[in-house]
Image (cartoon, rainbow, N blue to C red; front, side, top):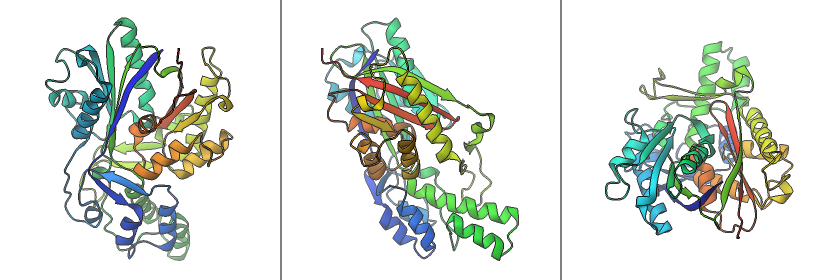
Length: 379
């Protein structure tokens, strides 16, 4: 088992309400699409840009922070709250899906900005482009290191800046998915025109769904702290699942200007729920699990894909969406948006009480999912 000693988050200075963003773009959005945006479960998100609404309308990006800077801030705060000797930290694991640049990787960039805090001789591991379920995989890597290096600690960092990857919304009109199906018949759209309208709608949803933030977790082998384990994984169960979520490296879309382009297939909510439920069942059946059913856990911390995805996972796990067990998941989605790799870490950071076990569930690109038990043994 590996124990959680400290956890801290970092967000940009700038937050933007969904209602404000939608109002600024209302002349372009159909009523159906506005209803879709209001049903995402996101009230606000943080952005590294101080002019996110203007950026969505086509103005140049004005970023005042970055993925790396968010990661550095979370790392420093995590160590400060721990109040221990940082020389004991022997491993830094840094994960992101939204790097500031391709090379060097995030762990090296964090090291470059933490002189005087982290030892120059610690091991570094970058786990980039691992999707939304990478936190528990990173915890397992830390666990392996700690088993070989007793007395040492590991820093696990998830940092994301999604909003710079969003496409500006420069079309004159955007429609809901059902409206596009009607337009296909009424205007006799060919396949390319139909897919372009679907893609444009997806861009609008992504601009309202994702947010920026970072979380750092300091882990070690110390009793009296919440512990991770066991952990279960599932990857690419069906061959075609690998294409459920993809991002190309150089988009040809006219508004993206060569930036990467993110694609989410319509079956993601259904398959995501299946992956989440499967890994949860597997971890509950593990011989080392301290619990055998969800009735024995205090919290279910489920990745914030969207409200629709959260609702689907809850339905398949027979959890009431308004229950206290899943409140943390919906609250993080509401206040921060989809933070991909950092989402469940934010839930851990905002969890106040550790009276009983909790379960952490992440799923995304791969297609892959991970579920793990967290147990608090006061003794």
